[in-house]
Image 1 (tube, rainbow, N blue to C red):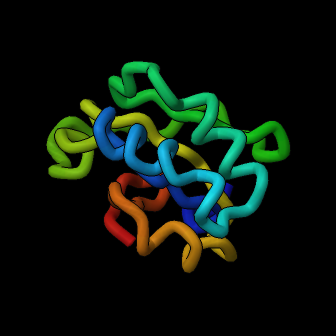
Image 2 (image 1 turned 30 degrees about the horizontal axis):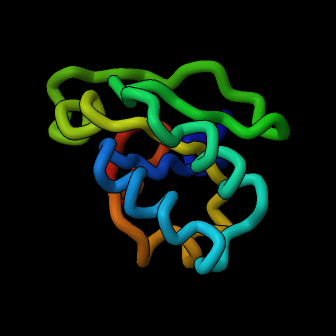
Length: 102
């Protein structure tokens, strides 16, 4: 799988709640909104929320990366790079599948 094929939007608990509270007022593709709904109220702990149309089970997890340390308290929503502009202005941070900042 090409490491740039998908991106991950990492949200901690408070960020996920802030996004959820305004979800009906922001412009996001439906599949991302569905994953925000699924993520809401759940402890992230580095877990991924993956839409049905994306075939991804896990990512490489390098404990030495700063992003891994940040992501371990977050939940990650996997999304298509073409939707980056929708997500970049929202709380949280974005990585590729190798946990490199985007």
